Image (cartoon, rainbow, N blue to C red; front, side):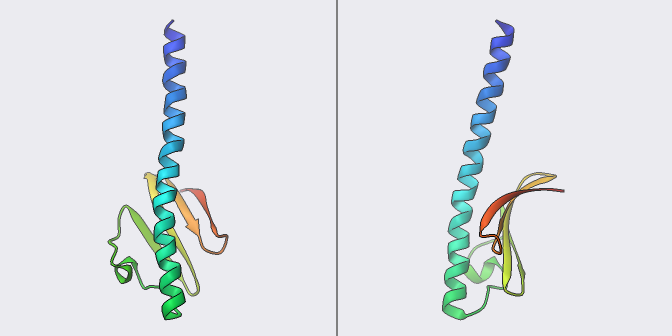
Length: 94
């Protein structure tokens, strides 16, 4: 019985973690869309999220010439990162 309860808790934790990541990515994709729209209209990437009338945190933005990243810190050593060069989200561990 005790093993079943522990197993059930572990399974639920995994399910909720996956749902949480989906939510983070869905919300992050809205930011990516705003960045791409800004770039299309102005011809350059925004300097920071303030250019999009957004505040830094919990999503952050780095630009590198014509490329950029949007990231969300999951924990002190793990982030979800959108890489504009790849055009997709990935996990990053530091």
